[in-house]
Image (cartoon, rainbow, N blue to C red; front, side, top):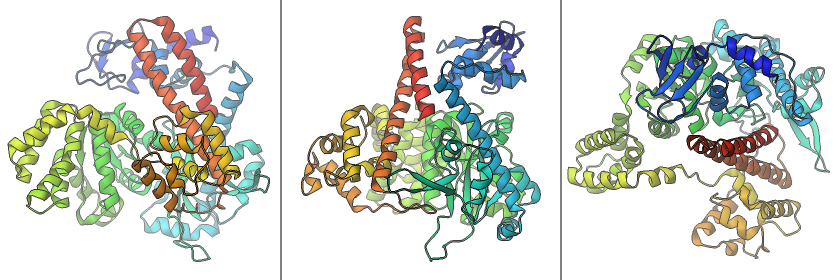
Length: 597
């Protein structure tokens, strides 16, 4: 991007306003503003912005730079992308973009086209909701209290029970590669392994657009109207868009585009579990609400929230899954030094049901009465282990200790533990000893807690690796894994990949396992039959393997990106500009590979 345009943008950009979109700033001088640094954890604001000179500096971690540097670092953008982002925020018309390579131009063109096709799909679904064939969908939405205003505000639509209509309409405006990359369509497998005719992924479902932070649709969640198909087979209640070049489910919070201003103004976020809960709460007047959209809460989403507030109220569904999700969310939020409260609604109702049954005032009262997360967890421990026996007390204490370990503040850890000891009737000397061990092992415990169980990607590849030697899926998996051991380094299944990818599989595949733990892992994988994906034909094992290998390669790139980001920060702190530049160039290559993946 031309230097003169970058200088024009920099001259016109109000760095306080731009940074203020990410960090809550307060004025501390004629031209100075301070806030909590977004680049490292801190309790007192050491992050400073100077309006006159247009720069920021953190006295804690020593990050510094101009408005472009800030956006580059926080959004993981290249310099040209940061200039364009700041120009867009300032309402400055963009010049015709120049690209460094045809590959970069194609990548940018595809992303623009994917934004456009998702907007076209949103309009298509909105129009279909008004059609005669959507009477059942309109009836359902009315029954859930959805007004015309709500439907229009959240652009709710309907995917008709038609395989081809949307494809044929969009094909008039978008090329084949964009349709296939959009995630809006599925395709039948061909005998030669190629991609067959596309058909609509979402059919006979109510559609909820998922928007990025700028309010652009990037994916959909679609709710089925029936519980079974015409052959009596169960239908998944919700179906989501697959991950695409635009959409990574763990990086998105539903309704963030509408809620972010109120989160910053009110200085807290309300976190709910699903779209219907989020929509109902928002339309009831609680505008600072976001949803995790049925996915596990992630560290990326926590960091996203932390740009707007460090206060959170968690109101997940009161079923077993919801309680488990609440506990995991509390753990992640606590680690990032959030002040967390939890709402448990009476009658076992979710937020949407509670609002419809008891009204807005009752729900607002429930929010005001939200429990401190420590009280919520102690109550949970008492519910799970109600007996007053020594064994029950030990189990209750073991339930709470991982949460105590995660707390970054020693005083808070001690207060939580003392409160738990009193309410659980645990001798304080035993509790203090456990707390001492917990503090000593905190870092290791957090790391252990974050280790995820074997993923579906690993499961698919293990199933492929135990197939006969000449099976195409087995050949593909063995060759790729043998050539790219860095793809699976550190994964739970890594010891099995090492053995199975390089050796002939014995008659009993379990004999190939190097130890009892991996033997049990492989046995569990081979005993589990994968479920068919509702709404699309069953994939061949070779196609599943190819998709799993692509996912493995993608995750490897993500790990490289994280490692490089940390190395760049370290080099900049040490003042090694040459190394930082070398690492930045390497990271840009990884970023480009990720966008193309």
